[in-house]
Image 1 (cartoon, one colour):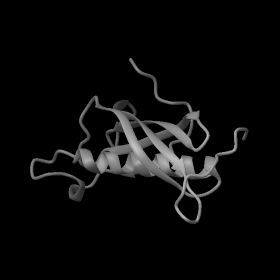
Image 2 (cartoon, helix red, strand yellow):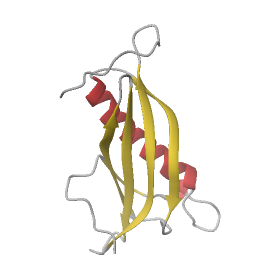
Image 3 (cartoon, one colour):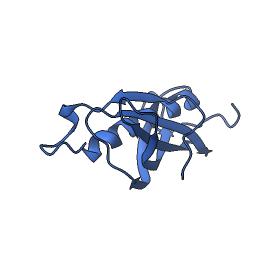
Image 4 (cartoon, helix red, strand yellow):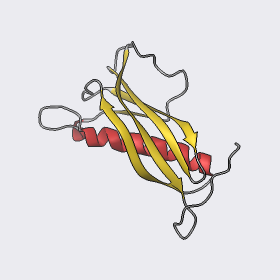
Length: 127
């Protein structure tokens, strides 16, 4: 079994009815948006400024998310290049009254640091 990350989540929300289809299944796009937002927070902090998503790799859905579930998104730096960063992101869900968390998605998000003219800029090598 996969282990819950031992860090605080980057984002934590409750899945609501507006985030689901008529059958009560949470939209995958809603979850991807949360993951992109979490990755963006980590990338901007690491870049010390603006950073934009350029790609997403390896999106996998492992388990469903239900209305009322608490969704926690964990994001961390995987690699840093000259102008780009890869952010590893995992989403976990738990029943609102339960303790058992389940990994529901994971993906790598690639960001590029940009300047005021929206051109790629270097990310400091050491932080």
